[in-house]
Image (tube, rainbow, N blue to C red; front, side, top):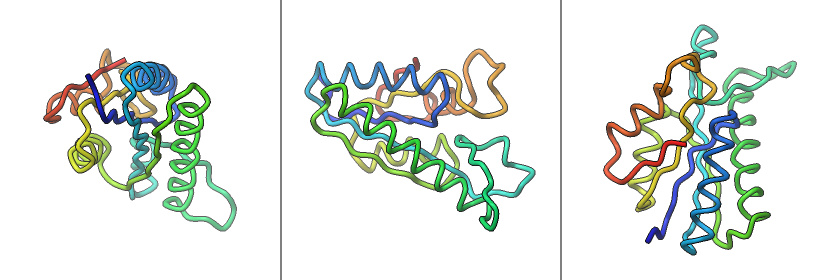
Length: 147
């Protein structure tokens, strides 16, 4: 059914639920699971809009903190999938606008399904469907499962 599944994972509650579902699907289909965490290069003012929120450590800049938080989230997603029986799993981090980066990466990796949480860690948590998941569903050229 599916050969390559992309899970967009940011560490949020919604992304955690999506990771569980993507892991189940990958195991059921014998598919490769590709975890992607996106962080943004941005100003301090835009920090609350990012897909991943890092904590600032003394002596580090915001981009370094965001990259470290993204790496931690991606590694967690990979470990979760392996611990739950997915044999082919990889994890990546990318900088960029979350929705466009997710869709572009899925296209680049020839994914035939994108799995996203309905709401992530952005300022849009109060919406019924978060802005990232909404945008991914609108621009993806493969099926998108919103969990």
